[in-house]
Amino acid sequence: MTVPVLQVQALRAYYKISSFGLDREVRAVDDVTFHVNANEIYGLAGESSCGKTTLIRTIAAATKPPLRVVGGSIVFNFAGRAVDMQKADDDTVAAVRWKHLSYIMQGSMSVLNPVRRVERSFVDFAFRHVGRRMAEFLDIVSDHLRRLDLSPDILSAYPHQLSGGMRQRVAIALATVCRPEFIIADEPTTALDVIVQNGVLAMIRDVQKELGSSLIFVTHDLAVHANLCHRLGVMYAGRLVEEGGTREMFRAPLHPYTAHLVASLPRIGNTEPKKGLEGTPPNLADPPSGCRFHPRCPLAREVCRAQVPPMVEVAPGRRVACFAVTPPARAA
Amino acid sequence: MPPLLEVADAHRVYSLGSIFSRHRLRAVDGVSFTMEADKPEIFTIVGESGSGKTTLARMILNMVRPSSGAIRFRGQDLSQIRGGQARLAFMKQVQPIFQNPFEAFNPLKKVDRYLFMTARHIAGLTATTEIEAATDEALRNVGLSLGEIRGRYPHELSGGQLQRIAIARSLISKPALIVADEPVSMVDASLRMSIVNLLRRLRDGMGVSIIYITHDLATAYYISDRIIIMNKGRVVESGAARAVLDNPQHPYSIRLKQAVLSPEAAGSAGTLLAESAAAAGQ
Image 1 (tube, rainbow over the protein chains, first blue to last red):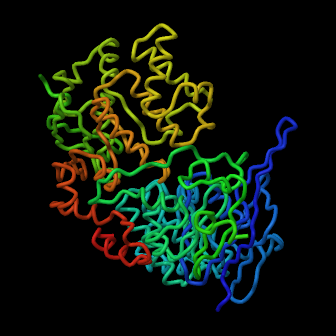
Image 2: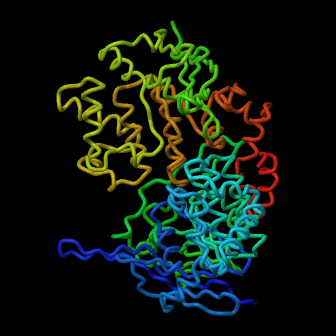
Image 3: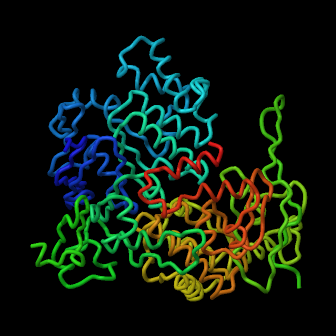
């Protein structure tokens, strides 16, 4: 078996806040282990404030106080060279960023400089990583845009002259111009309507296929995951609760939270009543004891309140953290 | 008995550009429909960004005047509403719900204050006990209570809770019509269905008619009675929601339906995406 491109091992990242002499700890990412293979789209699902964004920020080594990595490791493997993002010095991280590891962000407006032409954003982000002369660099950018079915004319446009979908495409082009091995996409289609979303998703898939990169795709919308990802991880309150191949996850979800998410997806041609999830999302500063999902879980039992269910591999490539699936005796 | 709402050939034209390079944008271009007064329903307006859905909603809320054509609420032309009293009486009957619950609330004010203000100024209540009773009743209709939210700031509540409070706010004055502009597009997938179910309960339990504006055909199919599909300001297809969405006729409606991501595609790793994107002309 080949070495995965990204290996995250027992990662813990907490926000430590002290105000008025009171120390508070927000456990945004708590004991998360997963890996991403080469040439694979890995989907990360979960509701707002479940720690998705914190997780990918930590992976990109963009942690700033009060966010701190408390434990665990993040190791990238770029062309046989292992890079531990926690131990690497600033120069190494800077060299890796954009060249090997790039980022497609949610608000494309905040990526592109609003008072400069698009070309300037490309120069700012990518010029020094390509390491060519300016004229050659601009040729590379134009070729890249053409490959993505964008006209090189947009280089001389200002961001506000482009539509939301077009800006998102430019942001994708910007993130992929250095042909990175690893791309992180954080809710890149959330603000777009269905037709535009479809085009942007198809573009992300095509770029990934062409470059053969690995991609982490983050969104709370499971319908997007269903259509794009090879493997899927579901997060709840800072923990990964289930992981597996996309098809298996949708056909037979094991964790009650995943089951709820899949069952509540509205479909055209189906009008049976669907339930929303009862209860409120957990407060990560004071998470519920034991399994963090138990206050909202229909299958909650005594043991769920007391113990944290471990992540157990129930089938090859399929892991789940739930006592209803793996009874505590077996798990222990 | 006049219909609840009658939109008769409504147009709205915006002039853009400078004095030298004017061009006219037809945001809404001849839309007509009628909602009956005695039959509460969920009427859905579907279309992509820039199709004129929001402009139409703003005209129904009397925030934007139609350039031509008329909008009548219970037989009264909205452009004839003059003076504070008449406006208040209209606002009491027709209430909005906005897209982003985090923007709808002032982050520096407690959320209950917003509800009390609505009760005082729009529902016209004066006694504190009456205001609190009306607020509590509205909150109970959305599955919350005044005790739970009293004294809380918006940042202490989740997006789903805030959106339910926004719906409760619109219910305080006991409106006949609610205009909900993309009420679930900023809400998490896990909470989306509880908001959508709530709209359905308002129709069945309280007899409120709802204009539901969305680009999400799946939830539209789930709750709507009637639907119109808009493209570039025009209605391209209309009718009973299930019939239209099961078997769309207009090329644009077909494109829109194909763009909906279906969970049945799970594990296809994006192969279906290619077909629908090609069909959508991307």
